[in-house]
Length: 302
Ligand SMILES: NC(=O)c1ccc[n+]([C@@H]2O[C@H](COP(=O)([O-])OP(=O)(O)OC[C@H]3O[C@@H](n4cnc5c(N)ncnc54)[C@H](OP(=O)(O)O)[C@@H]3O)[C@@H](O)[C@H]2O)c1
Image (tube, rainbow, N blue to C red; front, side):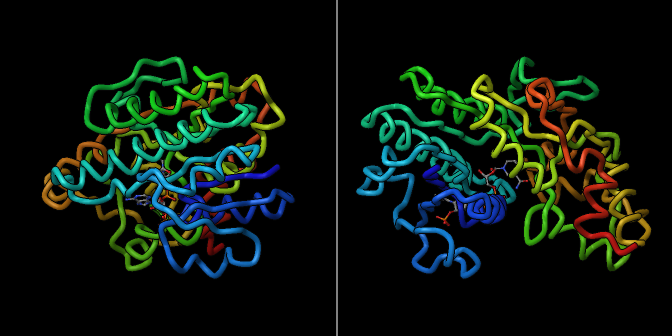
């Protein structure tokens, strides 16, 4: 298929790009960068543009069969008013421009747009599926607005899938890249009480779940891209310690996390127990369903 990707230069996008190219897809990546990553230069075609702003790049969109929207400024920053505006604009304006571009074409495309478990807000022990109600905090409201913008494509008759990623575990970025050096230096451990749930997915399963979508046209609307076995934060820390053959005993107390992260701390100190109900019902099989399997594969030293 001819695939058009926003956010293709990022941690998730670069890995997904390589898998799409390996599977024979013809890939176009929209980027603001003058110099795209060397690892992608042989397989992908690059179009320069800022997805937040309307521009000539939009004419490219309807010429593709499959649009994947990953672009979004990182949430791991101090949430000043300016930062919140960038979190918002990089998602909502990008998605709005993509839908406008799709509306101008023949509307035969598959449109996939990203979201996250933050949609559900802090939910304690509740088991959450795609049918669960959204939350009320900043991240939940941002995710709802992001999803609503993408679902306008569905209203135009375009098949739309909202891929709600759990924390993506992979090489070369994301949460593991932040945590692994700490654990290797014997300063890793649970965060806050450690009881909060963490919903996650191995990068290979995320790419495989994307590739599952064109073959399963019944999957539309929100689809949780999370492993079937979410873990408590303290059990994640233990599993990472096991994979790295290091202890995981140094907890990061809640007040320290709040001092460092400000408002973002609430998202880290609480969590969601999300289940991939739609994927499993459709017959998707995870290569890395448990946290030990995922971490042994990604950072295992045994
Ligand atoms: N990583 C995770 O665990 C995780 C979990 C849940 C959801 N997500 C979501 O998945 C998406 C990809 O995550 P990631 O970890 O791959 O992020 P990333 O490495 O930070 O990459 C983000 C991508 O978005 C584009 N981007 C960043 N800031 C932008 C801005 N201000 N305006 C326009 N485009 C901007 C960049 O494209 P260019 O620089 O090429 O223009 C970049 O390739 C994000 O939307 C994120 O919220 C990620």
